[in-house]
Image 1: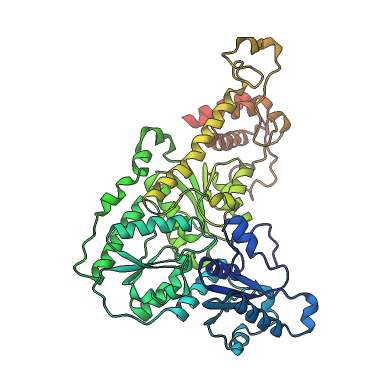
Image 2: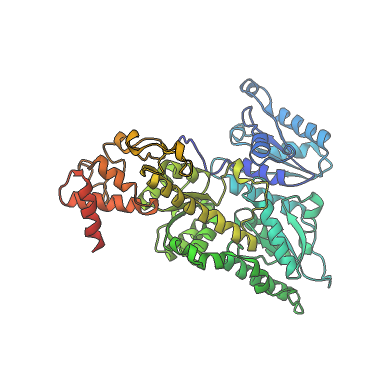
Length: 541
């Protein structure tokens, strides 16, 4: 077994909680030991929901294993029904409780409750959270979706599928996608599972097609609805201007297939006119962002979308692409191959950190884990995907999808770069006699000190240390580590370190690598100021 400080996904019963918590009139009874009861922490402290999640635990202890845990599970189901009176119930076991091999399906059926009771088999030791959410939603849809209805003749309708509790910007994405499809003249029949009631799911077959917002969660259910009820579903996730344009065209095509007389109420280009990302990314102020090296990692939906937006709409260079969602490894590998890259498919954050270190990007687009990695490496980072922390569930409207979502993406991704440049300029001028920390405000003459009264100010790193505190380089030599394992590290002089920190952060890593390479090829063990200048002149030719 491999111990980890961070994990990208929880066990599958967390995914089941996300679906249950998103819905109304549904209650989840989880067979779990004491210690697995952390639903309140996830939903009320991280997502800041205004009510407790609808989850009841059996919370058995070690001493209970000598008795009949099955009876305790049945008592928990009966008690939860009597207390909450839900319209339907879910029953399942956590990873630890699976080892006991109690039968949630049989035990709940024996109670003969007057509401649908949906058993979940979550395969805790082979699957993860997103799969658990997808499987739970599929089971609920299969159990509660009503019979197909005849043609109504009152307009085209669709369902919006996939948004859950604890989802990254799902609340705001729903608002944006609903606005887009309704602006085209398509009515929204059901939104599920987010804020859907049990009775709403019975109306799913009334729609003409389904909009799959998050394939990791909704695609399994959408495929079943297509097979059983003849409902096609969208394949395009509207993140970015280009994808939103394709999404609108796809919705119009599905609506026209359902009703040959359908005509969109508004043209797609009219709806896209509010997107400011194309103008901003083409403006003079954004030219310096062209070609910036970007590393992308997250769930498959957001990683694929981010790589496309970064390359096609912001002119970044994608130098790394990966996901922790192994079920979607194939499309991620295909997208990476199209970029000339090898996809990183892993749920080990240490492998991700090693890949980022090797790529030396100038911006990271990732999850909460990549944000911590970026802090350690001194790189700017924007969060694009779950897992995330409380700060990524803002009170403001901040979608990722649709027209406004494209504007949010531009701000979220570009601001870390521009603020990093500002921070670099402040650091660079900190040694100046007029602008250093010891100097008073320039407009207050009496507060200024004479230049001779001050000790020289040395620019500090992000961790508060100065170049004098470092005698050897933390970054290994460039090239093939296996071939250079026995080579000593180059030593940087204090003057050279100070000069290196005057180089903008987004090319500083390249300058350091080139200088180390220049010194190594010439057998120079101590990099002096002259070595740095010579390397610069050499590589400029």
